[in-house]
Length: 473
Image (cartoon, rainbow, N blue to C red; front, top):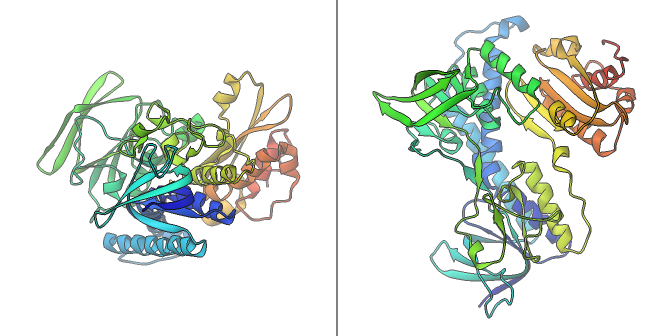
């Protein structure tokens, strides 16, 4: 006997459960099919656990500089098992919260592995889902609309076996029992940079290998270059413009060995562990897409502006459709899909207006076009940059590294991009996001009164600086 729903969601990560909640709010009968734990990668193997590590690393780093604050203490140490316990406690609390939201919104949670099946006696459309339950029994879920939210997993490289002992992805790294003395991080994007930052703060000897000319290659070049400078200052070895030779990977005497070529010179790197952070790949396999007419291009599901696949009653959201692969982007896409199913006309944010946040020390945040992207579009730009060294709260806080960079159109005065690196910029970028959505000018943002002393003052100063009106507070 099939179970019937208005909306079924395949995957219970942040995109999936947000879509389910919104659909339920709109009066739909909803089920979520999840083979693991509700919350997905973000809650269990990504955003939340990694940020708990980063917070502990930040606290420890601050304690190392305690004397500048007039604080003196002895015998400060890292107990990594306690950090792991704190991580587990936070995850469990948030997981219970997601379960509560499902109950509150009367969403059925079906625990098992789902595969989309073709037309059957239960459904004339290819959208029904066969679910292998945890006890081995099979269940068929039939819904008027299906939302695929199966997420992604870390990419690997041929020649490097991920064994969790020597070579890891972020999944395995989050479960480490103890900190290594040294590590090679392959990839200097968001994940690699965050791990380099937190591990170096914990006293690990870190080497980052990045193929591009600077860290954070998808961000404005000045952000990547500044983060690279600050990490090097903290002792991180950063090899950019580097070619990795995965076929040379080996383990011996408790260490990994791998060759890289930098500026025409080949070198063998050695460390206790190797962390691969070379991006993520969409989970499009073994979910039954071959039973549908859904189009997959370059490893991701193709959708329109309303998240509909080439089968209009089947939607796809989150990492499985590529794009920014950010938790908040997936949640927004889930809302768009649910509202479209309900017959509404939701607004899908332009990809460049989705904020991007990196939780290194110092943090990095941005929205809009980079300076290079803006000029490549033929725009005549004006640029202003204000340093945190001029912000009183940053001096009080004890971290005045970094800056805010604003890019505007010379002709229209539109804000084209805001790029930040500095203390807690991930908490400040939302002002820039709102400014761009409301089509505000730098002058309008600069005229809004920013309280003193706060870190947020830098946004007003940077906006005023576009027209040479910064006061230098």
